Length: 346
Image 1: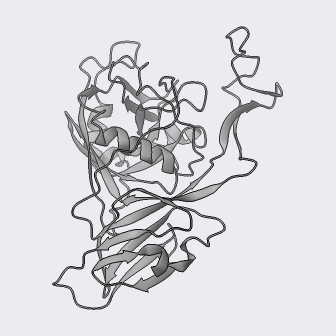
Image 2 (image 1 turned 60 degrees about the vertical axis):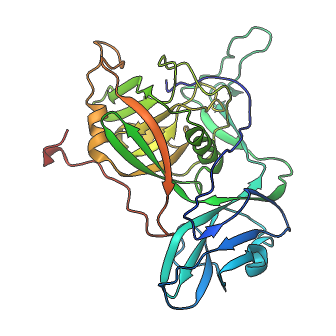
Image 3 (image 1 turned 30 degrees about the vertical axis):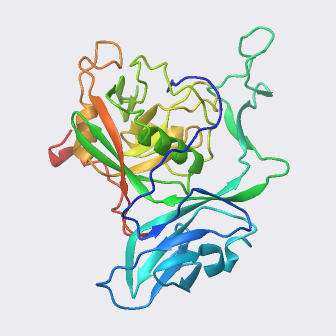
């Protein structure tokens, strides 16, 4: 079982807003219907009208666009539909000068009550839970249970969480892996991971689990994120499972948890193949995809383990997680793919 630990709920995002960003906000949270103060820097060597484009992930054309000048601006005034959206979703605000996208986009995450995940065993007709009287699980079997998301009866939209888009670089003893974060699939998980990274949580933490193959011989996962190195530790809090639609595939980063779906913390795993990890879709929160570092992922997976276990003999080390400015919207490198078996790499 992919494991982490238990504890409280929310998290505090302690991120330094990038000094290199062309679009800047001086805080991260903006209440619904209120001004969104924005700093705009326009490079002097670019010609053409400057504008801010609002993008919906996956869409070819921007949802909206508005001209802008250097200095201070109110994003809510520039894009009046910002607060009128009846079905708010993650959006990206990108500065464009002429036809050139400039700098990392801003990520706009709606603050709205999320659905809660439960494990439902249709055969037993039960939702899996720990009996508070006995401290033992009920008769539902979590292995055959389906993850169901129960929406809030009256979800409340309170505003936007806004920050410059960043990639996460895992600096390991075997090399670096750069991940594109996917808040459009798992915004709260991304926010938690960014907070832990910025706070130095992932400092000299070993890869405590190398499950290189499944029982059927398909490449599976490598796991990290527990400072104790035991596989039982975490950050002292939990966050809920999110209904991510990012498929588990080679190079995808996902959250480890206990049996309870809402016990995500700090432990993460890197997927080693689609064949080995497709069964995790919808049951674990995938939240990032590698855009470089294929050889490093393969080297991690090749770490020798103790006989009969998935514990590395000499565990690779995650020295730190660096947050770096993302490319302009739409210009991130494509996700890495697993090399063909005959290309000379493992």
